[in-house]
Length: 302
Image 1 (tube, helix red, strand yellow):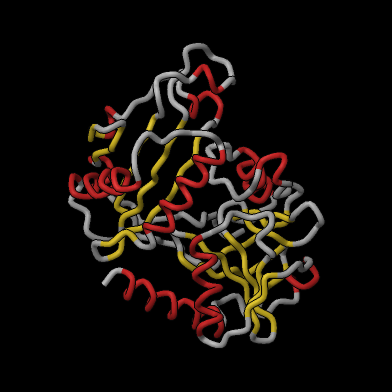
Image 2: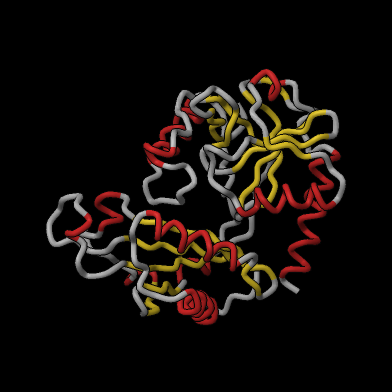
């Protein structure tokens, strides 16, 4: 069995032991970046977050990330307590404190804050939000294409927990990931409530059939920023692209498959449920999209 890996695998970097972390307006050493056991995020997974990537001194698509963060906070009735400009400044201050210029990843997290008693009602969070920014030196190191396994865990309906929310409550995806690993794969392929192929536990999912790119309708998956960039790039460069319902039968017969996400951009999938996809390497459409995305990043971060 080939060694397991994740879609967020990065090179080891000793500098990450000495990083400085932004926590509620203070920049502190990693060992001092501590929160209360009464924090809503720790206690209940009550919060939202964003992952951002630094290329050549610029945080890629930062406006879209801040749009999504503030939209998610509004959806869960969470007052971030900072303006967009103040959140962006906190990111830049953390970057400056860590002397980072490129190949860095930031995880910006906002929870409902410390509770007065250990119960779920939001009114018990009275001290304001907890906001933190973890910024690490991070260069992706994915040694081989990703293997997926379909799992029984679904991306659910919006009236249960809307999959579009980048919430701290990730247990459904974690259970999916565990199931995939138990099946000998790297990541889980998750279906929607109708049985159509949707997404993985950590990334958005695409297939290529006869030169055309397919992805889910978007109704049950994270509204990924990289996902949308790929769709836009296809439309702008005459690559047929469809947001549609499709099944595992369509997926197993795909010529290519790849994942999208802020960390890994586009990551090739070589196998799904033991069935090889293409020749197990990035196919011509995937390679073209990777090149188009690389050019987009260069333009965005010039």
